[in-house]
Image (tube, rainbow, N blue to C red; front, side):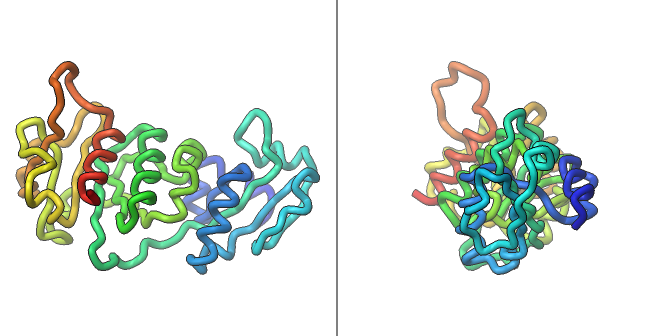
Length: 239
C-alpha cells in the first residue's frame, strides 16, 4: 500500500476500501505481536517506526520513516514513533461454547473499546455490531480496547432481525426481567444490548422472543452505563 493511501486510513471509508487499519504506540504493537503468534493473518501487518524505535524487534515487515512522515500517520498530537498497518480479519466460525454479544447501534468509542477488552479478558466471546454502530477500527476504539481488538471476533452490520435465524436462545436486559443471577442465565447463545440512549424498540425484542434479565441495583439512579452493564453480564456468564 502506498504511503498516501496509508494516511487515508484515518477515515472510515478508506479503512473499508483498503481493509486495513492503523494502531499506534508501543503497548498496542506489543499486543499485536502477541496476537500474531496465534493468528496467522495478522502476520501480514507492517510496522512503521521513526528513529527512536529503529531497533524494535518484530516479526513484521518494518520500515524506518522520518519524523515528518510519522506525524502524518499519527492521529495523536505527540506521535509515539511506532505505527502498525493491520489487515482487517474476516470473522471466524463460532467456537464451541462461545457466547455472542450483540450491540445495537452503540455510539460511544470508549464503551465499545471497554466491552472488547472485557470480552477478550474472559474469552470465548464474539462481538456482533448492528448497523449504525461506531466503527470498531477507529483510533479511539482501538486505544480503548488496549489490544483486545486483536483477540475478539467482530462482525459488522449484523441486522437485529437476523439473530432469530442464527440463535435458538436470545437474552436481553430489561428492568423487569429476572435477575442475571438466576439459574439459566448462562444457557443463552446470544445476549442483546441496546443503544446507550434509546435501548432497543420493544416490538423488535418481541419479534426476537428474547428472554429478559435485569441487573439488580439500589434504584438510586435510572440505569447503568452500557459498558458497565455488559461487563457485569459477561462476568456473571463466566462466574
